[in-house]
Each structure stands twice: as structure tokens, then as C-alpha cells.
Length: 374
Length: 126
Image (cartoon, each protein chain N blue to C red):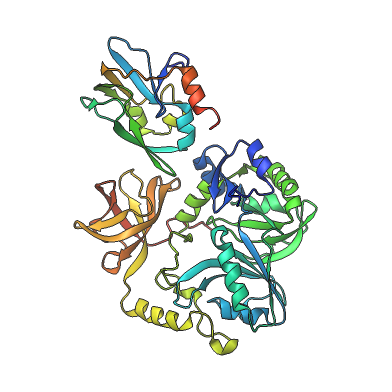
């Protein structure tokens, strides 16, 4: 069996740009092109261009497509209008999170589910299995799409010059078909950076042309190519969870502080959906006796907390860091961590992170660390 | 300040300058700086510390990871680069110049320091 990494349609282009590549979920992806800090700052102040072709697209179609999604996922997909998108999750029977997803409603009876690269097969298998008994088809479309994201305050202006789509009419968390640089694309106003921006789902053979067109249109306003490294610091500043860090099968959406994505009042299947019973209990537990809460931590010093490091108070372990990085925007190390409820209030004194044996002081804050001015 | 041609190297990607009056300057190579990414924190040995060849004497933290800093020789630290402590990005922008890390009075030198050619061969293909 070959274990060679998968390559995106833009692989040769990344290498010609001198990208440092990294293995991510079996894909060879750009980590950074030059300085990840410059890339981060470009997205915050100008624009950045990302290859996200490793994400997993699954198409769900048919007369009962929405019934299937309402049953398989925790959200109320019935209320998503054509051309809109919804952040949701797929859970196990025991309520554990299998993945977080974005579901786009492309047509009356056609949905595109976008899964994390590391979970694409798991989500595909679960949807296929859960489709039994529904008049709906689940199709693996991972190879049908390349995905390019342009993110940052200059992104609407850059994209406008290349598309016939009405971007002003395109709301956040909406997607519509159009053309970009003369080729068909699904244009979605979504992203994972905390900035305004767009994700463009294209045929792989069109990816290079669109990338080059965006590079050319964006260069005058400061757009640069960006890798996964800055994507991680951008999403961390924006307080967005990452599967495998803040979200795992051992946590329910309520444990992750994202109980709002679970909708018990569904209009289809008489309210039945996978994980319902377990999630009802998790909701009650979160209300009455939450074990740990997801918080933000800001370092007073300069040493960086990493995933897995212990959060401490009075010499006791009171939590665990799930993601940590130096924040280019704040100029200090930041982290997300699950912390015992007793120490989770913003402003709690005496909280530290064990960084290789030294307890470094941290300030407990509410998430996100960064919110863009609209 | 330093010309890579004249330096000697370790397998752990430190460089060592010419020895003047028993003192040499230590830094990390451009190859290592590139591999680390943006360095955001440098913990350097302090003046008066004794460092031992091949053993850790500090750490360099970048966006993605933390790496140990190894001493290329045994000796006493006579100066640490405060500029790098204040602005760790010097390690990325000028690894052979303003981004030097510390100066050491050499007590003992290992025999396996590498020439530029040997170091280039070590890092070729990476």
C-alpha cells in the first residue's frame, strides 16, 4: 500500500513559490511561503490566498436529502435556505463529536457538506451509513473540487474584479454559483480566519488559473500566498475550534462550549437524530455542573503554551491547553484551554501554564482574542 | 560579522566562529532558522554559565515548535546577545550576523565540528 502524500492541483505552483511543505492529514500542504507572521498580518490588514483543497466535500442529493441531514447531524438543516450555509457538527450515538462541518444548500434538494481533511472518510462513512432508509444519495466529491480561499479586508475588492457574481448581495455564511476568472465556481462567503473573505470551490483543472488571476488582481493591494501555519494562528486569535484540539470524540458540543449548534427542536424525523439522548443529558450537565470550560489564556511572559500542556493553579493541575501559539496581533503567546469551572471565569487570579517545568503566569479571558471591526 | 565559509558547524545546526583570545561566537545556521520559522522567544545561557559540548544550553521557540539549543563547545559563557532576547526575529533575518546567540570562552572543543562542506553535505536534500 502506498503511503505517498496526496498532492493538490496547486502542488507544482506551491513549490515554484518556494513553499515549505508539511504533511497534513495525508496531504502535502504548504505550511508557509516565507514568514508566517507576515502572512498572518497580511490576512488581518490586506489579503491572503490559501489552498484548502485537502478539505473533504460530500454531496447529498435527493427528495429526502434534508431529512437525512437533519437525522445525521445535530443542526436543524431544514431552516437553511438555498444559497446559505450553516456551521454544524456530526456526533456519535454517545454525543462525542465526529467532526465539525459546514453545510451549503446549493439547490432545493442538493447540499454540500464540507468536512475536515482528517475526518473526510469518517464523515463520508457515517453519512453513507445513516442514509439507509432515506431517499437520498451521498456522493464522495473530494476529487471533484479544488478549494481556494481569499481572506482579509481587501478580499471583496480583489474578487469583484474577477467575478460576475453579486458579492455585495452575498452575505456571511452564504454561497452561490458564479464565475471567477472566467471559470465556474461556487463562491462562498466563509472562512476560518476571523476576517471577511471567500472560499472558492472549483474544478481542480481550473485551480491554477484562478490562483494566478487572484495573485495578479491582489498584488497591488498586498495579497500574498498563505500557508497552514498562519491559518492556525488566525483561527486561534478568532477563537475558532480545531478538530483534534478543541473538538474530539470524547467531548460533546456542550462540553466544547458549542451547545448552541445542537437543535433539539427539529422539524423532520419527529425530532429524531443520532446522539439525541446523550446530548440531552450533556446539555443538562453543562447547565448544572459543567466539568471544564473552554477559555482563552494570554501569557504575561513570552514562552508559548502548546497543546497538551497542563494549566495549573496553586500547584494543582486544573486544565489542559488544547491550542497555543504566539499571537502576532496581540504580540503575546495565547492559548485555548479546557479549565475546571472554578478557574474558568475571566480574570481568575493565579492561573498558570506548566511550560517544561516552569509555571508561567497567564490571564484567563473569554474568547475570542480578536474580533474584526465591521 | 561572520562568513559561513570560515565557520565551523555542529550536526545540531549551530555555528562557531573563529576563536579570538580563547573566545568564540555561537549562533544557529540559516538552514536551522528557516526550518524553525519565525523565532518568537530565545532563552540563552547567561554570562558565567558553564556550557558543555553537545548538551542543551537554551531554547528557541518559534510559532510552531520549540527547539533545544546545544552548546558546540565546552566553556564559560562571557556574553549573551541581548538584542536577540529583545528581538528574536534577528535569528531569522541575520542568523550569521546580528542574530548570533552567545560568546563562549572555550575550555574544550569536540573533534567532530564540521567544515562548511561537511555541513552543506549534511543538510543537502533537506
